[in-house]
Image 1 (cartoon, rainbow, N blue to C red):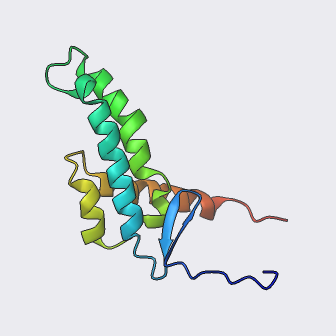
Image 2: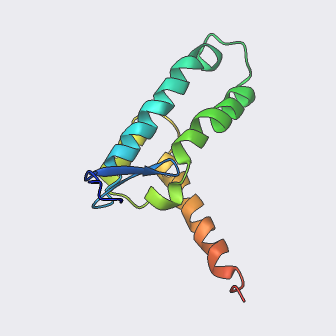
Amino acid sequence: MLDANIPWQRNYKYLGVTLDKNLHFRDHIERVRNTALFYKARLGAMLGRKSKLSRRNKRTIYKMCIRTVMTYASPVFAHAAPKALHRLQGLRTPTISKYMKDASKRFFDIAASHPPYP
């Protein structure tokens, strides 16, 4: 642009999703995992065994804070290699890959049933 060199990028972050040239999503999954671990550490006192919160409230906090971070844009990367998705599962949370694949299926079912744009 305007005779300026544009450096080549191996990864590019777009709308919160890190894309690489082969769409393996390894960097994205690693970033999501680190973010989820950060939130889990910050909320550890509320989610831990010694917390006086009910199990229902702990589950609600998990669903609102941690799972949303892990599944943002999951229809895009839910079908990445199982080995890559296993890194998210290593957080000892309920089966996140199943949740992501179900969310992806719901997303594409809704998109398929949407009437065409005139």
